[in-house]
Each structure stands twice: as C-alpha cells, then as structure tokens.
Length: 303
Image (cartoon, rainbow, N blue to C red; front, side):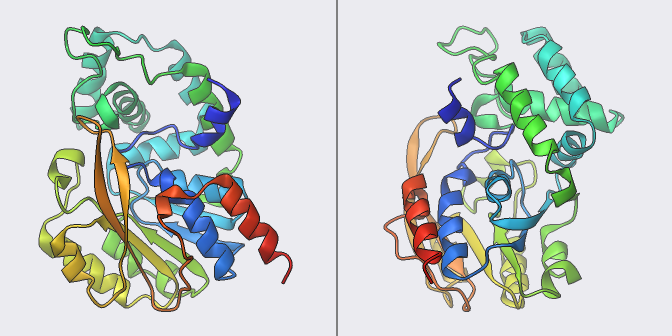
C-alpha cells in the first residue's frame, strides 16, 4: 500500500457509507466558523474516521468518540490502551475460513473477554463484505470469489494505523453511551465550543447494516435532543422523505455518495446544521479535496 493510500484512511475499521469522505468538508466548516482548536464529539463513532482526520491535523483539541456497540467500544479501548497486543494479533492471526468461523463464535459469545471481543469485531470488520460484522465473508464461504477474505487485511498498514492512533491516546476519550444520553449530557450541553457531529444509522436499510439500528421513534428522539443543543452541530443521514420531513425546520444540503455494501451503487445523503453555523458553499460535502482545504486554510490565516 502506497503512502498516499495510507494517509487517505485514518481508521483501522471499515464502515458502509464511509464518513471519512466528508472529513474535508468538516474542516472547511470549522475554518469558516472559527472552530479550530475546539473539542469534538461523535456519538456514533463507528470507525471514527472524521474524528481521527481532525485530530491528526490538529483541527481539534480533544475527540470524544462514543459507540453503544460493545464490540466497537472494546476495539477502541484496546487500540488506545494496549496497541502492542492488538498489533501482535493482527500480525499473527490466520486468515482462513476456520479462523473466521472461530472469530464469529467469539464475537457472538456473551462470555468473551473484552480484548477478545475487540479483536473479533476488528477481524470480522476487515474480512466481511463492506465491513458489516454480521454480514458475509469476502469471497463467500467457498472462497471462490475474485477477492478472498484477506483482501482488506494488510497487516503492516493496519498496525501503522493502530500505532498512530495510540500516539494520540491522551487526546481521545472513548465511551459506550446511548447517543441521546450523550447528546443530553453536560459534555455536550455545557460547552458551546464543542462541535457535535452525528451520523445516525441509516433510516432506510439500517437494519441490514448495523447491529444497533433505529426505529422511527429513535430518530425522533435524536432530533429532539439535537434541537436543544446550544453549541454547533452537524447531522448526516440518508436522504429519505421521512428524514427530510423530520428535520424540515433545518435547511438540507443534499449530495450523492457511493456505497459498496452488497454491490456498488450511489445514494443521496443529506446534512443538516445548527442555526448558528455558516455553511461552506460547495457542490457536495463528499467532493472536497485536500487542495480545497489547503486553500481555505491559507485564506483563513490572512484575516
């Protein structure tokens, strides 16, 4: 894997939709609203790709990443607290169907130790199609596909990501709260300088992509909690009619995003923003290049 590709991906985890594609837009948003150096809160961390990108480039002071999924939570705890142990496993684990089946059993067992659950979550995320832990293995059970289960398991590159994240451990706090509970906590409600970014489970097809998917009432609960937040916030969704109606009081920014789950496709997504935010004028939040960010950053230093 070349250096350009290494720097493109911050997270060791893979997720449908790829929040990392909007990381550069969030940087533009922070520049335009003088938010550089603030704290950042992500209640649906998943792969935490946006948080990591912002942290690595010093856009934020501290990242609060949260995920109610126990396997994901345990993975981030292990990454920050014992990266050497995690990397030893990454470098030595067999990439075979027998091991894949064993890791599935570890992941589904309620008696698995936190470090074993963490690694099983990571292993299945890297060897399953589109990173869906509950999904099917890359290449199929017979391993007859063009790509096999090791196609997304570059050991050296993954360890490099883990070790880089671990160097920032003092500036990362991991939690396992219900997202609404986190939004309503003093962490978010008590500081208007904390940027909140939410990427809740998709309204459409969420049940097939996430272990913790939402009913309509859950989406309403998040909308209500966000509406009470005094500080800046951004929320992204699949642009279903139900979500557009739910957030009808906020101006939508719709854009197209490429998906890889099950088969390559494109979908329309939408972002909503807190009323106090100036929104960068762009064609698509997913189409911002490194050059675009550099120009905006250079312009910001002139004022």
